[in-house]
Length: 539
Ligand code: GLN
Image (tube, rainbow, N blue to C red; front, side, top):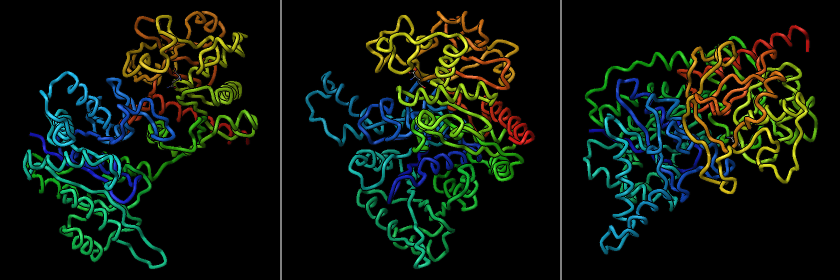
């Protein structure tokens, strides 16, 4: 039977609970165990699909097409187990199931309550992911003390009683701030947060203390004393430059041994951290560096483009190169012109997005990259922008009356599929999850992937409008990847450009530091070549 680690957060948000949970997963996987993850989100939305990226950050899409919390992205980047719809549970999902059951009369007249009905449903969903795994790492969203997360905390409290003390661990991620004027690390916020946890019946077994500097032995002893824990159960989770160092610093603090001992994981092997050490070394000692511009709409909130940011770094890893990012607000291009905003970039990327705002700025960025021979990578909406730019400026295909246009794409070359009901465009008709794609030989796409058939993850409503395929092909835009029935355009590229490629899917969701995505690796490589060229010519 699987054993369980529950990860809660204290004091404040953004302490890196997701990275901590993922790093625990990576460590235990490096000890030969089969690990999976589950994330509990205390909001009432059934899934984050409809949420504004400003509030929630990126919506991460799994192979099976679930729209999930971005922490699932971290899990997939750190642990080799694929995530799916079952690995993300929200309050909304739980209540919906319980209320639907109540309406069907399945509670046989009972009063339906948070305890036991909601807590039972939560426990059931945790159990559902455990099959065939040695260890389940369950992260509870939010911060201890929030009212929304109480049913989840109650459910995980009960869990230990249901399946036995030796099978469950509680790890609490907390903040130990350094106060400069006193030159001291302060333990009080952690003391209070642990007190709140204990008030609801959960005594943490492990404290992961986020700090600027290493916790000294006296600080660990003090935290232990006030939080009712042994000194060795207090782990320093010191700030690091790269998230991929976290498994290594946790190991240095003895975390994997502690977990193996406490949970009596008798099948754990000696640790093999070679892969993480290699990744860490490569990140620290890059031989080259490039600057890539991301032309987006939510650029002030980096969380909105989490997987993209990671995938570009992985692309750098594959080329021994540091990737510096310049986040560009698309509307600034509209206001101030391309040259001012985009000059000096080695590569230009237009990522996915929704809505019309900033579209013209993104389209100008495509034109700038195309005409100046700067490597260009378009993703989803980025493909739409690329095709619109080409249609307008190379084929003279003009916009129809704008009131007839779809709200996201402003040009007839990108549209709904004929059988897609236009009225329902706000939901239900998105193409979500993994779909196959066939690559044409002698293309940059094939050169990067090295295989003819691939599968990639989608999240969009609009598609390339096939009515324009011949016209654009004749004008030099190549359709290098198509759905197996050839009905859907998945990849376009310009053969005579140094590297100009746009995809209808989201390759960033499949990139990991272990296996950088081939298109990100190829894009970074092309940007490096461009950087060398422009330096040589003194531009
Ligand atoms: N808004 C576009 C569509 O729905 C693009 C979506 C995206 O970039 N993920 O098709």
